[in-house]
Length: 386
Image (cartoon, rainbow, N blue to C red; front, side):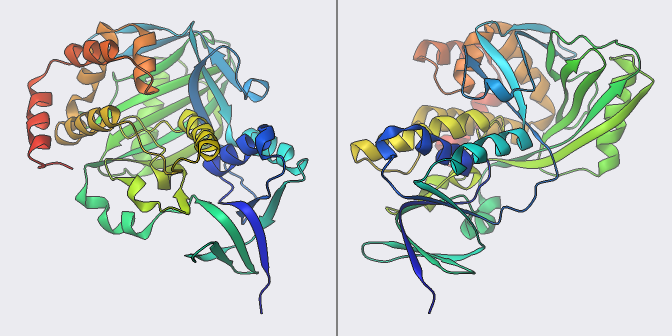
């Protein structure tokens, strides 16, 4: 018979959301006498992706940042915008540094245990939750589960859904021709005319940068499509012909109106992408993982529900923007140009972080004056899009 280990909280998955949550637990003295378990297969992660976010002042991750910027640029055929990140610095770190940093902190805490196991299923009993592993069973008062729900996979196409899919290269040049003081937030000057697609540039040194081509669309592309646009962008706009690709990253991130919060229960909380922690209209997730982890701890202390739900106004606004991008995918550059050109950077960043005032929201909505938004708004009222 398999043994049962008992814990106050069990975190299933040691990825981005699982490590954010466990890091929040270990930083809070309130939980120093609680037994917390993190279960993951902890396979060696060879691929090194980049996490980007913006925040005011110093943050928890400043010691492991790859770089940060105080200014950014937006380019499109409609016009260009200089973006001021002096209040909200734009920051980037790589995933391997993040995982290593957090795990090292967790290993020093007696109340937190890291276990390597594959989870077969999770079962709710009357007063407990049993996590059935390949090696043994684990008992917890509450479980935080980062695994995708099968229901989402079945019902994916019943909701307004796009994919953020991308390929990025870190290039190293012989000549020091890269402007490392400013990054490129979005550049729509080279793209597939039928889709919302843009290039994103993070300069690390005068001879080193990440250049990434990203789509917001329903279907993924063949690798050679991204490569074609990356080569064209590097030559035409960075004016670099002699370079080597030293690293690459790729991925697919769901952007969807699917109600992830419904997949949680009283004793099992879905977290990360399985909990809807990815911003539906942009695909950003790093800041949300930190913010929602702290909210969970706050709710534990107050005896409130541990299911994370997006504020209704942002849920509605994301649904509308996602609906417009879905139905009028070729107009993404126009939409983002209007938004960025008519609003100060700080207002946009507050809005995207879901920390904006009602006045901020109204100004952004009015800046996007478009018959397309009106059409999608009316459709949403009649539930023609979900």
